[in-house]
Amino acid sequence: MKKTIALIWLLSSMLMAATASANTSEFPHRGKFKNVPVMEMSALQAKFDSVAIVDVRSAYEFETLHIKGAVNIPLSSKDFGTRLKALSAKSGKQLVMYCNGGTCKKSYKAVEKAMAAGVTNVVAFDAGIYAWASTHPQHSVLLGQHPMQAGAFIDNKRFKSHMLTAKDFEANFGPRAQILDIRDRAQRDTQLFPFQEKRAQLDEMDRIKEIVAQAKRSNKTLLVYDKVGKQVRWFQYFLEREGVRNYYFMKGGSEGYYEAKLGKFLIKIPEKS
Image 1: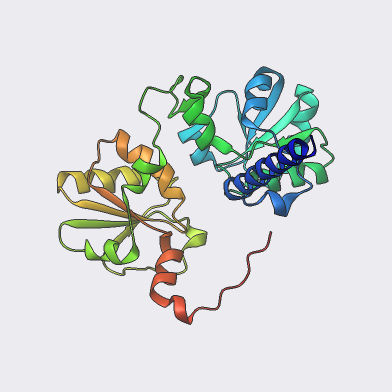
Image 2 (image 1 turned 90 degrees about the horizontal axis):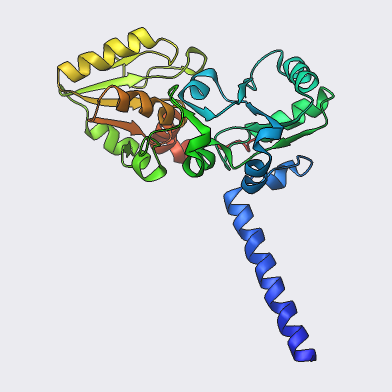
């Protein structure tokens, strides 16, 4: 009897440890935001019609892909807390914040801001849009289309197939390539490739369409980079819709480039939570 109890205790401990390890790898920031309540995928699915879902990413990301029925209130909005309080009062529902996925901190920070503004019935859906869209395409909106068409979601494998290291990115330079910097103006400290690149931030769609169309007509490889390698994920949907096939992104964006080139000389400052 004692051996049976001991075995059950051992198996339970191993299962708990494995679960904790999985949560740590899938959601590395939960430990830093222990005061933030989270909602799991199954819970959001069950409560989908009885909660108010808030997308705290940029307008461009939201317009590309979002959860059906979600309201877009970017975390960077100056009136973020005020808008959340108004939504909470109007809907009378629990607010569910989400961003891109498990490695994104915005959903946690959004909950903290909401609480600071006096909104208490709020949680973070930290699995984010990537996980939701891949498992619930019927409740996702892609480029204005709902439900999502089969195969329209760009998974990690497909995304990474267009990703190059800084070294390989530079190896593709030449007359048959067009470099495009899509960083926001506030992110542009300097040009990485003077006299070789064109610049257009994501809200300058007329200019972007012109650059992309010209690259297509000239049969040039489009080499695109952003700040940290995340904005390009959403830009990929535009490229695919425009029928661009010959394109690549730079891993880690401009920050990844600096680190690859000057990493051993840079002093890394710990990131603030």
